[in-house]
Length: 275
Image (cartoon, rainbow, N blue to C red; front, side, top):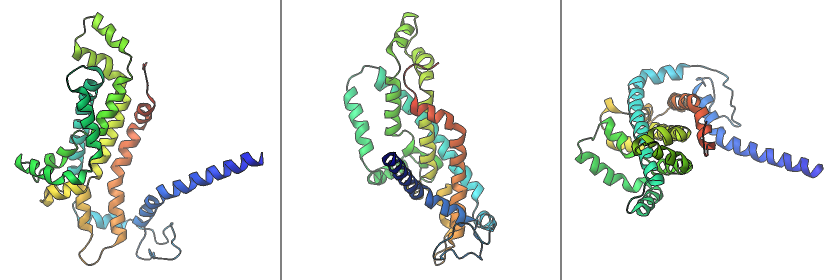
């Protein structure tokens, strides 16, 4: 009994430690956003609950930069990214999992290789391609590199591979062509995984900072992550103001996840036949 109790205590302490490591910085940013001028943000030991709570940091952030415009730009980029990943990864995943074609194994290897290459090494080539397409300083150019992620393709490939072959064979017997089998038989079985792809694509597009910073030069098309960088002055920056901007940028991600969380966990757990 003592051994089991000690193991349980050690397990929960370890979980609490990891929870603190993961949630601690986010909690600190959230409380920092509500700390007023009367709070010492450099106090030792630090304190979490604000002693001079205020929402003036958020008001100042909205007054200093056009948050709503940046928010709309980020929403457009995220919408393009989500749409592109759902359509592209679904079609590619179905092809890799169900269709037979030449060089199929080579295509799969190339997709794996795309996951292994750091994105930073491709920035120059991406910039040249987007510039030659005339999409520099546009929201479409900001969304283009993330239009279809290799990881999302592999997720959809695995999801389609889990759909029983007998379902498609029954569709063939009934005279369904390949598009009908894709749309009416296979696609309904992988809706959960499609939600996972949508959430990953939304978070990736919304949080992306480096690529929009490179490709966008006009303030009118800045995304929210790039625009929030204007909250820092050249010589002085207020951590409270930056924390408020971070919280503003975090809200849409939380809302998007809470809206689709039921489908997200379904997609993580889904397997063969769905009802």
